[in-house]
Image (cartoon, rainbow, N blue to C red; front, top):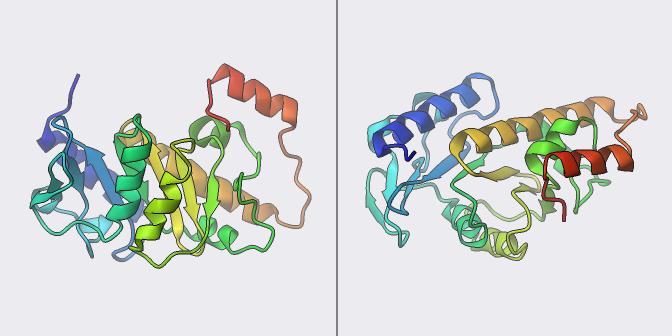
Length: 216
């Protein structure tokens, strides 16, 4: 059943405030976009704070990506557009500046192809493999080029020295997944130097098979 545009606007603001209140983003950082029933987008405006979004001023784009009403959309539209054009299953995208995931992206031993270590089953179930992308200036169109270069094979990427971006089948799925990404990064940073017992290849494969996880 489709969700009305007014309901989507309310959901964006509720989810954004929840992320803000729990310290998963701060100030005017982070952005969200959600696909509307007519193929357009609702997007958080540039310079807006997740803690006090107004449903009425969210940016509205038509199916061709043209801004038709509301405040100006986030400057990170290139990365949102890249995910929508390369992943047909994407109906919502969330980008945060999570402290632990950003810290982990700066580590010299960060794994570019599989950013999150297999500490729990949940990051595997909700995210698959997370690709670590190079640093780009915020709003740089090359961020979108890098995402399109993955040919739709990843639902989540980590922008080095910047923050995670997750695409989901709906807003709730995208939010839950990016929360899991940050929590797994927090665990990984807590465990650094302690030689934690991670999931082995057989356990990982069983999770991938049981939960039909994209793992490429």
